[in-house]
Image (cartoon, rainbow, N blue to C red):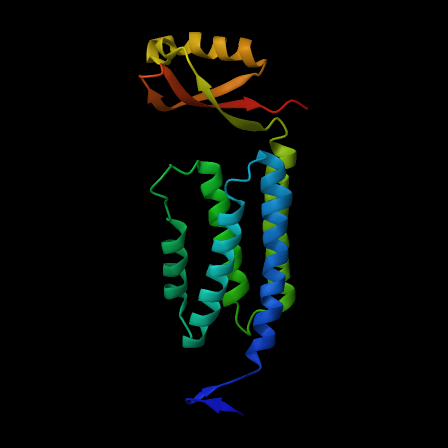
Length: 201
């Protein structure tokens, strides 16, 4: 075997890595594009999901060379699972999908020879099927979110919540289920509001 600085230039694990990466990318695309994006219609996290999935896969596959035990694997999974971003809070649904993306990438990279490819593919299919059932069957009346700029800041007071919701429903024609107040600009008398509404069939 050819070596450079006592490091092999090529070994059989290369083909295993390529195949598993291809498999991982297929299921990540199904989860991100087909399940997540078609459900929320937001592109904000697509790049993040793909890149975290790719990095977690290669990181875990590389560390697998050190024969990590289950404790270390779960430790890595927990570390990546609590990632938060300093700019804006990540909604709970997006965090859940992030957790799924990390979990799938860890499974596809760390599965050892005791786990057959049929079991790996089966685990991925079960995860995808579970998300599909929850997203498309159990919760058909799904909620979507939209960011808007609202100028009647006197309605953002807690005691004016019902008035705020009624005003937003009349102006948007949507059945609003939740309202989140964001940044307030007192100079322009405007505020950023995230509304969550029922998806129209």
